[in-house]
Image 1 (cartoon, rainbow over the protein chains, first blue to last red):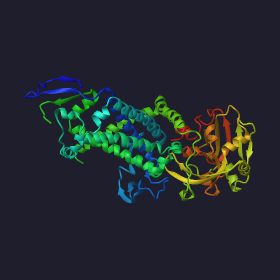
Image 2: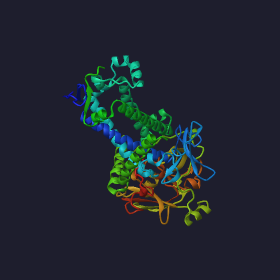
Image 3: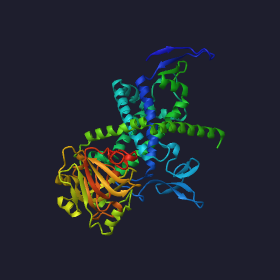
Image 4: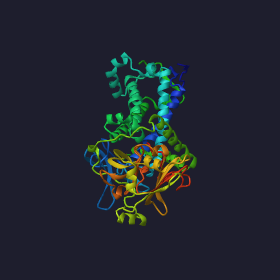
Length: 283
Length: 251
C-alpha cells in the first residue's frame, strides 16, 4: 500500500494522520458502475412491477393466490385510495403504494412516479432500461469477481479468517454501539462487512440474475430444473422482487455505515483511492 | 413532519426528479433509445447460444391447467368481416397463406388439421408479468410451411390479424423461419379441449411457446412469408414492436 505522510496543522495538538492508498482504480470504477446499475435496475424494475402489481407463488399466477398485491379502492368521493395486501393483511398505503399523486392528481399505480423509471407508466421503455443495465450489471459483476480472484482481493480482503470468526460476537456489539476501528485496523474489513459483501455479491447478485433468467421463456427451455427448484416462474418473480428488497436493505445499511464512519473520508477513498487514518488512535 | 425531515424528503424527491428527468431525455432521444435497444440484439444472440433453437418449452400436466385462461388485448374484434364469420361459427373461415411460398392458398381449419396435429400444455407468459397454463391443440406451423413450400429467400413469417387497434391498424406479428419451424409453434384451434373462445383468439391463433404473450397473435386472418418486414406496419415486425416493445420477446 502506498503511504503519504501528512500532519494536520490546523488541529491542536497536531495529530499524526496519513493518507493511505486503499482502493485501486478498477475497484473504484466498478463500484460506481454498480451504483448506477443498481439505481436504474431498481427503478426500472419497479416500473415493470407496476404493469402487474402482484406477486404469486407457483408456475402460474392467480389473483386469489397472490401473497403481495397493490391496488386501489375508491372512497366515497370517488377518489382512489391505495391499499396493499400482504399475506392476507390489508394495509392502507395511500400516497405511497397503490395510489399516489402524479402532477397534482391522485393516480392508481403501485409504486409512485418518483420511484419508477420512466416516471409515467411506460412498460416498454422500462424493459429497455432494465435489460440494458442488467447486461452492464452482469458484465461489471463478472469483471469484479474475476479481478478479485486475480488480485487476491477475494482471498486477502474478503475471506473471513479464523480470527475474524472468533471476534464475530464482539463485532456485532461494536456495530450496535457504532464503535468503529481506528488507525490501521480501519483499513481491514471486519467480519460483518466481509460477510455482507460476500453475501451481496454471490447470494444476492447471483440470485437476482438467476431469478431474472428464470422469468425468460426462452431460457426456461433449458433452465426448467432451476425454475422447478424455486417452485415455478411466478415464484422466481417473487424471489427476484425479494432479492431486490435485499439489495435495498444492504444499500441503506452500507450508506449508514459510510456516514457514521466519516462520509468525507470514505467518499474520498472510493473516488480517489486515498483514505486518511489516524495513527494516534489505537485500535 | 419536522423541518429537518421535510428538508430531507424534499432533497430526496429533488434528486430522484433530476435523475428521472435526465433519464427521460435519454428515453426520448433517438440515439439514447438506440443505445438502450442494443441490449435486445445481445440478449437474442446470447440466448440463442445457451438455449438452442431446438430446445422445447416445458410441458405441464392436466392438473397444472389454470382455472381461467386470462385473455388480454382484444377480446372481441369489431371488424365487419370478423363479425360476419363469427355469426356463422367460423364455418366459412379460411386462413390465407401468401408471400414467398410455392403454393399460396386458403385453408379451412379441417384442411389444416389434416396436415398434422399437436397437443401441448404450456405456460403463457405475458409481458406484464403474469402467467397462465393452458392446453393447446393445433397444426404445427412447420407442417403448413412444408406443405406450401417456402422459397429460399424467406426469412420471416408475418401473421395478419382480424382485430384492429385504431383506424387501419390491424394487429400483426412476425417470427423468424427457425422459430416458425419449431415443433411447438402451432396454429392453435382449441384451448383446454374446446374450440378456441373468442376472447382467446377464435378461430385460430399462434402459439410460439418460448416467447412472451404479445407474439402469440390471435384472430389470424392470413400468414405471409417474407424476406423483410420493413414495409409492413411501421416496419418493426409487429403491432407492439411498433409501440416500442422488443421484436425478440424471449425474455
